[in-house]
Length: 459
Image 1 (tube, one colour):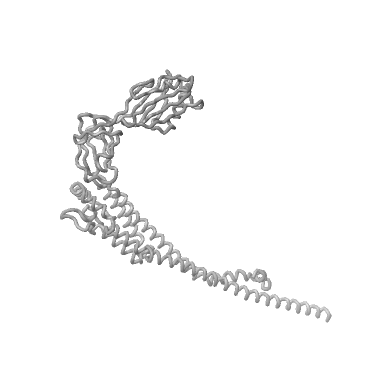
Image 2 (cartoon, helix red, strand yellow):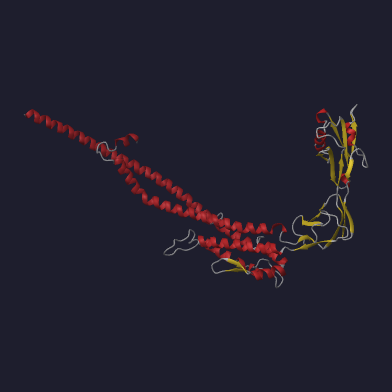
């Protein structure tokens, strides 16, 4: 083919390569333009459906995140969080009965302070220091490499005994401070066995009541009264007294009763409804945009003629009036409209604030149940999501558009193949023409030379 192409224009002097390109372009232009237009419409439709899917997923995910884990349900609250803070460990606590708590004593850890040494690098002597916590003995061998106050601190921290060590230094020198876990279970003793000829480790002895180390604080349990019942715990975070509730004891206040009771966060319920309305309005506006019909001045939207997408718009509009729960007591809210959610003619949503405030204040349990049930199987939002998935998912609009995309790709390949065949045919035809013209020119040139030679001879 390259050899043939090189002969184009040689005989005639005409740029037949350009002529061939023009003929090929003229032949393909209508079909190429049609394929481009069809591809543009298809890709725009796929993109629009992707936006709709993101909007529907956002509606479901946003509402589920708001209602999951019972965050809208009754939560424990303390009448005095400075004494004791109450938090839910998982989900709501509707079964919580009002409980009275009195913190008599906070749990505290044992703290030992060593005699004063010159600094953190002061030698402590060789030997073995043994920490005993709750009957478990942990020997720590002090060798030359760690025979300083800092080395002893690091060895204690690495021992896994449950005792932590720090160094407190000031202008007068440095002290080793040992601290156990809170509660009586964290009490510990310190024994030493100095190496032969060594006495330095004897500065770190404590037998439970005294020694060379000073007991700055002793290990004690937290003591409290729960509805008049005396209770002790080894920590100030107590999660095994009230089901689903963790109590954080913050200060001792004998004689000061703290009430732990379930409370509703009506602001959370109101905010959830507000967020739902905002998301529904955004989704409604998106649907209206992609199905908007054209007029004399505005081009029709990508999915304007798609009946399935229009039905989605209708289903979205029906969310506010659809019953949510199978049955509720008379007078309790069971539709989004009952919460004060209003649908405007343009498809946007708004909230009747006065109505919402009234319903949330009077029926908080029912409002929570309604909002939680929206995304549960069978709920209006769950049904809307399922309808959308059936419309645009496998077997739906998206699958149809994917097939259209594949057909376009195949049509382009067919067009490219036919274009190649057509171009090859034109090249062969024009090459033959060029060869004929070149031969004709050669014959003419020969005859012209002969005639001129004859004329010169006749003279």
